Structures are given as structure tokens and as C-alpha cells.
Image (cartoon, rainbow, N blue to C red; front, side, top):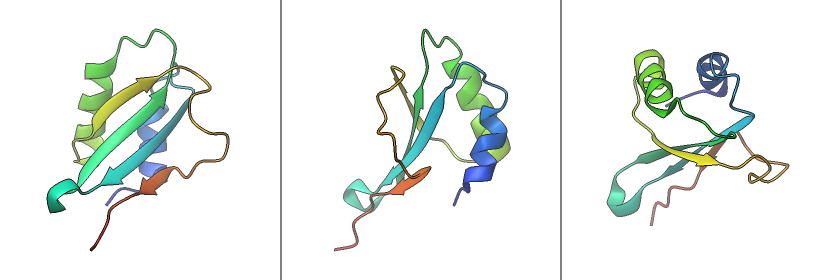
Length: 84
């Protein structure tokens, strides 16, 4: 799995990113990770994903959101997997 401090280390190199959250789901029983970031005019998507994969060894999808989109109180890693 991934820990918030690992993601913080990656995000330190991307000053454009104001806030972030990882959302984990498991549609069809397969774990999926979505990295949600708040940024204005973010143009470094490929670089961010490459750095994330290189340092954390996981491949998230990326969702770029406008600043203020994520709720004020969020968990850094939101596990929404269902086990039924």
C-alpha cells in the first residue's frame, strides 16, 4: 500500500499542486488508485505520474481538479473498496 508521507515526498517537487487525495476503489474486485490533485493550469501530468511510479512503485490514474474542489476535511488516503 501507500502511505501519506510517501505521496508528500513526491508532491514536494510539484509546487503547483495545492492539495491532493488518493482514492482507492476495487471495481470488479481489482484495486484501482486515483490520485486527485488541486491545481490551476497544471501541465506536468506525465512528469507527476512518472515520479509517482518511480518513487512509490504504483500506477494511479490522475484527476486534476480546480483549487477548492476537494472538501475542507479529507483523508489523505480514502479507501472506498467494498468487500461484499
